[in-house]
Image (cartoon, helix red, strand yellow):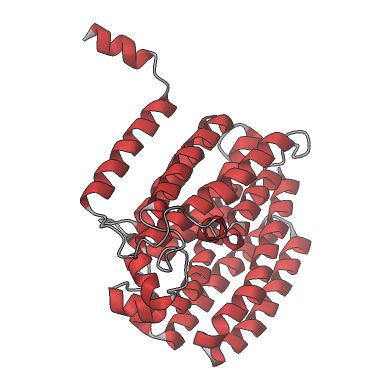
Length: 331
């Protein structure tokens, strides 16, 4: 017993977390994941396909949210540029990239229907290389997160677990049109914002920062719902109950629009309450412009969802930065 206690006393919490996560992944993938059905034409993954697997285009939202959190804290961003840079890299290329690799591995059968030219179903990432890449990036995430102190490491552990819970059996929250997009919105917008603010302020963020981060995370549920339109047919066949599958494209698009708009209206109301009228009016203008884009979206949701992701969503994230500077003034 004394030997065990003395051993535990010398082991850091980070190493304990890494050990238990490794055990979790071993059990998860030896019991629930089947061997890929691809023909093993290649032995090694194609380099360009490996980059496609981690989807650089998806890195922007968590990187932006982390920067918003750092700015909203009131901390000296330029004086702490190394912490900000490490956090941005962790939030985007590493953790988000890992989540994309994990999702593509767990979705390889769905992608074989929806998008057979993706890296795994096309065979450009052969065998179990998609799984190995996702697991290697999981380990890299935890190592890099350990350099950001207890708040940064804790947030990294939460983000890693959420990524696998979203995609992997037996949990696979992606099957739910409510829980899945909610979890992704929380990890893409709320968690990085909270983490950036916590690291720059060296402690728990203030109540207003947490509230604004949570509201933008809730609104991101609608963005994730629109992202599900591209996988409508495969989700229907494979039993993924996304909102476009459950409600149909038209109703799902209306729900997504309301879910995106209402949290922003709450942000505007809070900024007026906190005596930040200029910032509130700028976000109001952004919401009005989004409303015009939503009208175009609702005419043909299935075809216009990608267009809206390039227009209305950009206005949404610009409003996040406006809110961050408003909070910085309060700090």
